[in-house]
Structures are given as structure tokens and as C-alpha cells.
Image: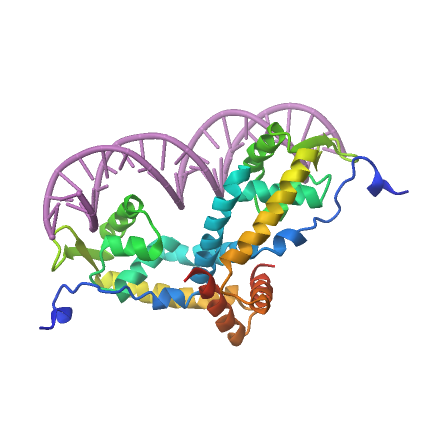
Length: 152
Length: 152
DNA sequence: TATTGTTATACTCTATAACTATA
DNA sequence: TATAGTTATAGAGTATAACAATA
């Protein structure tokens, strides 16, 4: 019997080989798999990826402005407003007048924000190792170097 | 004058080094950069990434079911309905009774769908080379192999 | 009972237009 | 005239619950 050559065949195992030859597909799938683990592990801190990224950039760049955050993280200004407001309401960050520009606001971590970021960064580093556990340290370095050649 | 050591410093250039040490950040940024080019180039065919992926899997897997597409592409069944309906309305695919399972529908490309997919796959392959133009052929192979070690 | 495909719907993410205060 | 931050809102993407038909 040869049912696979009928007019209406069915599929036993899905062939994804073409999609898997595309860099876009592979980067997207890899990113989604890491992001999924990230969201799970960061849920205890009530931090989404974007919250963590903003908190981290403020921590490493005290006095950074909203506009600078938008440029660095590719976020549109209207979409950052709620993120900043949320972190401010949780008293993880404070807004201070910008020293040179009356239009802008300098963003800073509070003590609570500094503590949370420190914990979050440890968790993030751990989770990254877990998500890439099938890679060697050398392979991780190579992978990051090649990815940056794409987007930087 | 040493304004950088004031109580409210400002940021000249944003330090993103911590985020750039994270695999999740790098895969996400690389994926977004390729996806952006993909959307631009595929707009002429009126195909979003998900439309192209579905069309490609149907083309390479005649008779595939919606459920199998959902599993392969990590799409939830309710969200696939509109995608399939759209491709069907444009007469790029046809739905045929599944040979063994009365609940399911086998999906197939029409002639128009086959033609569009062929063009789309050529465009996709070209655009991928453009998006990764700073990589050598060997680096591309390495990158894909390492990414698949993460998500597969 | 379980699964396929579907509807309805809610929630999140992303994008655009327009306003204010300041440069 | 241009920019930083904001509001309101629209659109796209993603999620859950529940249903009919079939296994």
C-alpha cells in the first residue's frame, strides 16, 4: 500500500528544513526560547524584559534620559512613558532635573532599585547559562560576536 | 570643571555593555534587525513573516494540517485561523479533506501559491545575505549551527 | 474522553498624531 | 524651529475559554 502518493497525502513528520536554513528564523526561534525562560525566572521580581533592560541601563548610566533609553533600546517615546511611570511608582527609580536641559529628566536608581537590579542581573546571568547549556564558553563568545556583526 | 561628578550627572554616551553580554539581548536585537529587512522586502508580496512561514511549510509539506503548523511554528490554534483564512481567500492555498481524519483539513498550495512561494523564497534568501553581509559563508553556517543548539 | 478547528474576547505590544514646555 | 516628555488612541500580536464535529 502506498498512501503517500495519493491525491491528498498527509504529513507524518513536518519538514522545516527550508525555514531552518534562514538566519531570520533561527535568530527568532533562539531569541524566543531564551525570552521564555527569562520571563519565567524574572517573574519573581515582577520584571518584564523591557523593565529589566531599562533598570539595567539606568543603573549603569545614572542620569540617563528617556530619550536616550528610547534610542538605546529601540522603544518609541510614548511606549516608554508607562514603563518609567511603573518603575517610579514602585520606587525603583527616581526622576531628577537634568543639569543642562530643562526639558529633560535624569533617571536614577533608588536603593531598592539598585538592590533589585543586582539580584536581577545575577538571575539573568544564571538563566542565560541555563538557556545556552548546550554551548561551550567558547561557543557562547563566538555566537555573541557573530550576532553583533549582524545588528551593530 | 568636572560636571560629571555632580549629584545629578548626565550621560554622554550610553553604556550598554552589560546588556550586550547577554545572549537573550543579542539574539533579540539580531532577530529584530533581520525581521525589519524581511518585512520591507516581503511587502511587495503582501506577506508577513508568519504568512511566509505558513506558505513555506505548506509548500514543503503538502497535506499538512493546521495543528501541525501550530506545533511547528509555535502558533496558538485560534491565531492561525485568520492566517489560513487570509491565504485561502487570496487563493494561495486550498483546503482538502484529510484522508484519515475527518476532523482535520489537509492544506495545499494552489498554482498561484506555488509561484508566490518560489519568488518569496528567492527574495528571502537574498535578503538574508544582505542582512548578514558582514558575515562570511563559514560564519553564517557556524552561527546557524550554534543558534540551533539553543532552541532545538 | 480527547482532539481539530473555530468563535469570541481580552490582554499586551507597537505605532501615529498631537499637545506642552523648553531649547 | 527643533527637541523632551507626554496623552490619547489605533493597530498588530498573543492569550484564554468555550463550543461543534469527529476520533
